[in-house]
Image 1 (cartoon, rainbow, N blue to C red):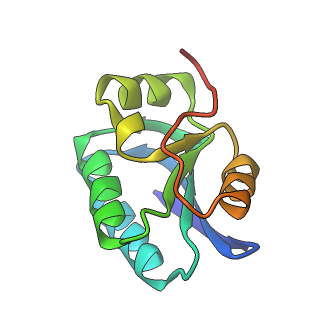
Image 2: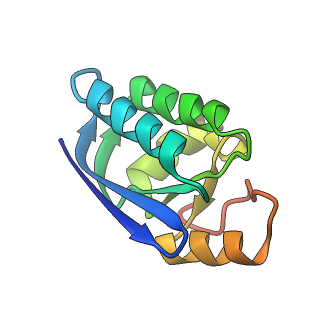
Length: 123
């Protein structure tokens, strides 16, 4: 698994690529938790390059959200299959979901409270 990392304004964007499953989730978890702890404004995970996420990857997201008291962890760019996994797991109630990384950054910049409502994507 390759995980890109770059700043976007005040936010940190993680861009994992490939599958997040039992063999790759430790790397994803480590990078996500380090990023969540180190970012002052929040972390946006761009899932555009992720083709699958298992329960281990979902646990990593849950742990990062719990670590950040301000709940500033969001996901963006979900492919339809990933969006379906999030829907089935009811993760729209756990993590903010946005169509794009830019949409997440704009929403957070204009609203100081975290938004857990999906901004679109496949139904």
